[in-house]
Amino acid sequence: DGGITQSPKYLFRKEGQNVTLSCEQNLNHDAMYWYRQDPGQGLRLIYYSQIVNDFQKGDIAEGYSVSREKKESFPLTVTSAQKNPTAFYLCASKTRTNTGELFFGEGSRLTVL
Amino acid sequence: GQQVMQIPQYQHVQEGEDFTTYCNSSTTLSNIQWYKQRPGGHPVFLIQLVKSGEVKKQKRLTFQFGEAKKNSSLHITATQTTDVGTYFCAGDGSGGGADGLTFGKGTHLIIQP
Figure 1 (cartoon, rainbow over the protein chains, first blue to last red):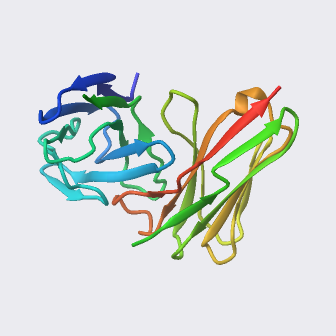
Figure 2: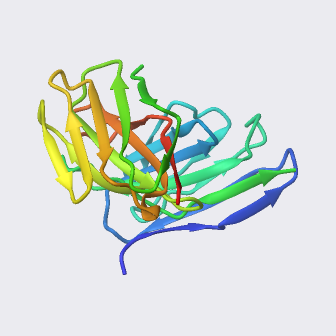
């Protein structure tokens, strides 16, 4: 079945550690996105990538890094520079058409202790 | 940058009552999308509106896009317990491109049996 797989689903880390969240899609989508969700804040765009080996900062990119070495994969690293990393992270993808529907993964909940 | 405001933040209704959430953008949108997120889940695409004044229906759900393409609404008739969740609008100001959507903060629909 086609879809987006995020892992891990839950992650606990100590303050000051870098963390990498995995996102893999088999939908053959060109564009991939990372959103952060906090209670009462909706979804905020961290990074996005329209094509392999290229990515752009979103609204809240500080303290995060990404790579797009393969079309299927768009991992997100939450670095120690991110001041408030505890959140629910959602990966999404879509085709580069006017339809624009975003397909979301099930999310990764990161808790920094 | 583009801002999308959504109200109300929370809405409590009795089962069988109607529900409406409103979305307003600071800029003209090329299209607007609506998503539903069940508690503990991830956002799922409901619909996209593209044309000025467009109205679309999905069973008990009615979606409208304003004439100026800066506001939208979602109305649910005779709510059911399965309607529980958070409803997000997401504005695309980029003409259907791949640079991400701006999400509203969502309306949490709480239904009392």
